[in-house]
Length: 450
Image (cartoon, one colour):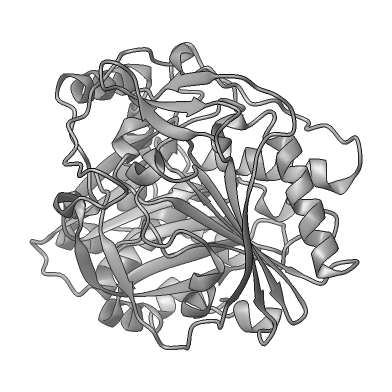
């Protein structure tokens, strides 16, 4: 599996000019007391990942910017009453096992208020706007391990010429994408009106899903520094977002299913799109027929574990599912070949497979890094099922939702629902520069409707 590389994103545009106006901390509004939550086997593989970053861009808002900031900070203090783990720090128990620690004397979440009034919202919506977006999100290049010394949640509120950017950095050792968007929706619910309650309470007890204590031997230095042993500089990458319309998605799904045999299971939208991406990126890399190519999906295990966990489970409940083949085989076979491999790998990842993966890690815990992923990987994160365009703080739905620069490597893909709803999907891809140039010219991949 893959964790950590510090990728170098191609700088084809100037960064946004950011002026920091203030920095403060926000704590839960009410007294919580001392709370401790052991990190479990599902959490620990991400300790050497970077903070997970999300960026929401809004056009316009009512009132003055200072008033909007105050409202966002006030509602953050309220929602942290339920999601107070995000206001804590990482710590260790007497056995050296990682945990989330919270007490009322801690500083809470970090909030930066910034100004980028020279920038229009429209300038941030382009397919190649990655370099402009980077400075709108906090904690670039910050490892989750640094949660021992830093807040577990950092927020940056940036004033734009005609809107607002809300950039968030979440410590990935304590939550996954499902929990991230649960928190964001809950925060927006509180912000929309006085006395508003969140619709779904977080399920906070991690030991309900796993209670084995695992001690990780980390190459730590004293103080808030990144250990040299887990630094890694990767190749120069380009990031681009490809927007697939509903009709393009339906064509992809139809084409993949048209190749399948009568006795095979039909392929879902996700499986068909994943195969489409896997084949296209593999073509763009111009690999030799004998070169391996690997597909990875970070799958939600909430309904796969035994007993199943609720969607509101707060933490990491994802595992990486792998499949692979030779490049020549993937590209020589019909489109259903890759889809069938992905489908079989996903179906096989049941509670037994999850248990075996956890036991293997517990018996031989290791620190994963992106450089461990190997070559020629296509990895899918996030999900078009996340209702990211419903995060309304009281000034409308976002114009765009993007990932930050962290946690990217050659072949990393993030999927989001398209803004126009229906069944459109946005595909955010990071690739080596030459491969990206070829992908942009691949008519079979583009479906002529992007």
